[in-house]
Image 1: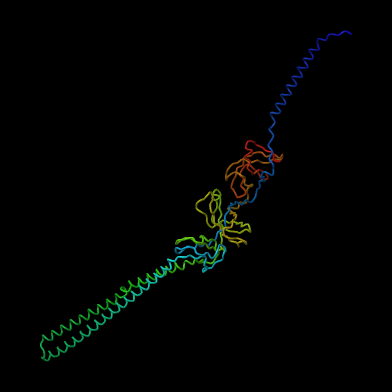
Image 2: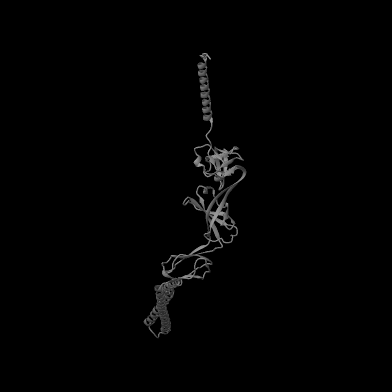
Length: 417
């Protein structure tokens, strides 16, 4: 068998290799181009781990919420009237009291001695007043006697002068004798007038002369009364009807005047003190309606007062309760409160997102029909406690993720599974 030379076969094989290589390079380029045009796979987010809400349109109630406590409207601190040592505590917080109920007893032996000394000072002042009154009465009687004697002498002298005048008219006595008796009668009449003036002035000065010892008696009696009140104050009484809320001292403690010993409240008259975040308190006004949740029931109320300054990032708002208190409501009970700011008739709104303030533009993930959520810019409007007005970026019926998605800041879409 003879081999026949085929010089065209190697050329054909090289041509086929070149064609296959060109096709492979073209396919690889096409695949690379297609891969480059594909989007990266979206990260998966568990639906149960995020809060998804639907955008709505309709009535919108703006509210702010805060926590706080129930506090009594009528509260009375009972201070110590005098210095003393706590010898006995009769009642403890929670006990019902009346004005005469003794809460605790203080001891002060020095105060007992002070009461006795003050009583002696009163007796001494009263004795001095009695002595002075006697002296004034004696002086007045003496002045009255002197006036009576002067009047008697003046009348006798006048009668003698008249008789002398009759004798002189008959020529039985001299003119000098008549003049002498008339002069004596005039002198005694003038003396009687002076005694009368002196008596009148003495009578007029009696109140002022008695005023000094009388004032001293009043001063000593007041001092005695104050000391006795201090002694009685050692029996610390409630002074009002209510419930003993706090005893602020311990057995054996020494207290000074003005020290708060106990606190009594009226448990039937309570108000709510809410702590509202300062960023939300700007729209709170007097008279706005509020609802207080005592955990045992809801009570309606109205805003009655607001602190002029914020403390610790919150503003204290007082709510006067208008409804009956639920059973179990008591002072210092922890509560939640909602204040209604305004009611809007037709507003596009959604649940309040984890971030964002009034008027801010934020990024939210909006769900689509494929189960993906894409980032969109949303402009917020007026805020409420649990919802916010949507001014732009969303339409009624859209579903958005309201949870904090900060961990996905580097992607524009996620897959909700």
